Length: 98
Image (tube, rainbow, N blue to C red; front, side, top):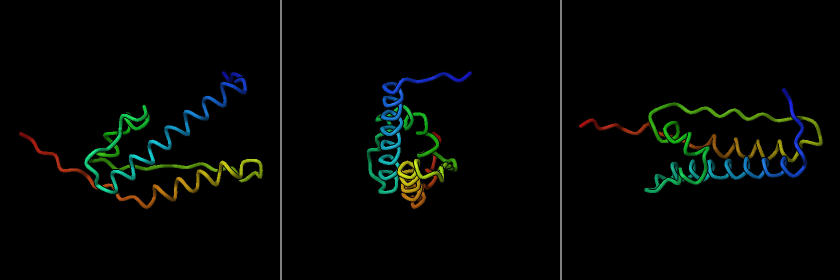
């Protein structure tokens, strides 16, 4: 069932989500730039998505937005994130079997 969160725990959860999304954005930028080091270990989210982002699979991101005025800033932040990651072209990496 549903449970109520105190303001402090909600703020902590929000900070953790934002940190994970920032790390995801950073990983995607590094992949796009074809850098030699990709910081997958910066968050649990990027570690879990490592095979999807740097492997040979297709990746889809879905962003939900709320049209209500009180959610405007959060929705705009989500739209900016979606716009940023939609410009990234992730290429499948060749696997070499020995």
